[in-house]
Image (cartoon, rainbow, N blue to C red; front, side, top):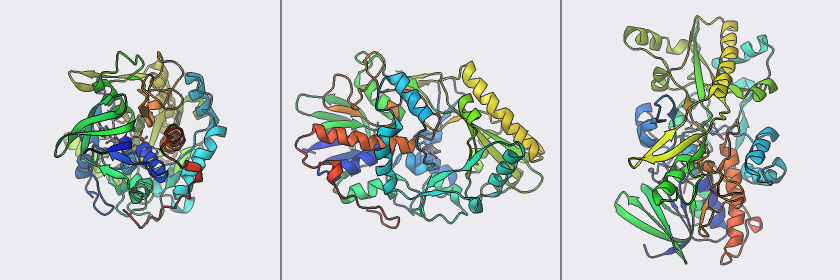
Length: 480
Ligand SMILES: Cc1cc2nc3c(=O)[nH]c(=O)nc-3n(C[C@H](O)[C@H](O)[C@H](O)COP(=O)(O)OP(=O)(O)OC[C@H]3O[C@@H](n4cnc5c(N)ncnc54)[C@H](O)[C@@H]3O)c2cc1C
């Protein structure tokens, strides 16, 4: 391909798709590269095993080097937004203060981010899961919370027309086109604006030059290079860090790979006398809002998983495990998600990504405090049996290329530019300086909106700004 694009974006997840929308809207020529496959709504695999293997890196089983923490990340056009639960929350002041204190970036505030959040929210259908849509698992959770006099609130989800029966299936891609994933929203609009999308192209390294930057990788058809005036890495915390490590930036950027976080989640199961059918209906409905929990560093949500996921949570095998799975319909589930503070380290070892991530005593204490509350709730709902998960799961992968003020402690400056590189930026969850303890994807999208404004202002060839533009609204029935 001889064309030199204004922008090449690596990674089509929450950040990459939002960026591609705003940059193409301003008239820039943009190429979006994605390692995973592209699926149209209606084509997503409906069985759990195939969905895991087709839509996630390593079949859904990235492990830390200690092999006691599972990390899930999307590998498909739309990235994590295709397989996620699409719970959309703005950060609270507590989270922005944490970001500001650890990075010295002064615009990490709700006041500055308000317009960016609003721009994103206008494009999405966000619904509150009200009581009439709670499934039995959520009702049991609410019952326990009320008995213990704890505060809770309904969750907010990006969805337009779910039928509230098979909601759990959309963790393998929403075939109804209701979940507000990127292929249903921003990406669909960007494609109408002449975005060039190349899927099944795994980027290995980049070579910045004087007048352009070259992006090297392996497409399904063979090795390929794409050139641009500017490259934006949006491959997620692990993907972006990996590309920079493979490019050989570890010496030049001492903070590269440091400060990896993942909000470890512990799914506790309770066996009940009556069927709970937690797999039916809106499988998540409620979150804890008790301010004491926020200070203690954990939150609780009612949640569930499909059969393979649930089977993996139970230790042991044979008849014991079989008896447990036969009670699938009787299982209630509450997750404890912690705001992890002990930073992990991402490196390359023997040419493979190595994720050194453990929990320190303070993180373990948060998990234990959450577990105590969950077990009290299980007592309130007369659970017959309580199960501890075999391992925690990290779904919110953040950090590795933190934003900050000094090259010693950060990888990008506060305008999303990689230190010392004029033609290279990073916009995705990797720039988080710490874990916020809040669902990250809405903020990642809002940061991408902000980044698009910086990027467009730097590129004088592109006339319009994102503010001048009439933004079309996504409709849920169309797909480009
Ligand atoms: C099961 C699950 C449930 C979740 N639920 C929620 C939720 O309810 N709310 C919420 O806010 N968050 C949730 N998340 C997290 C959320 O999806 C992520 O935080 C978000 O998608 C991260 O956005 P990103 O742009 O940083 O990266 P991603 O969305 O992960 O996108 C990165 C993309 O880059 C691609 N890529 C990586 N490396 C390369 C390479 N070398 N070459 C080419 N392409 C590459 C990947 O394949 C991927 O498509 C969930 C995640 C999971 C796994």
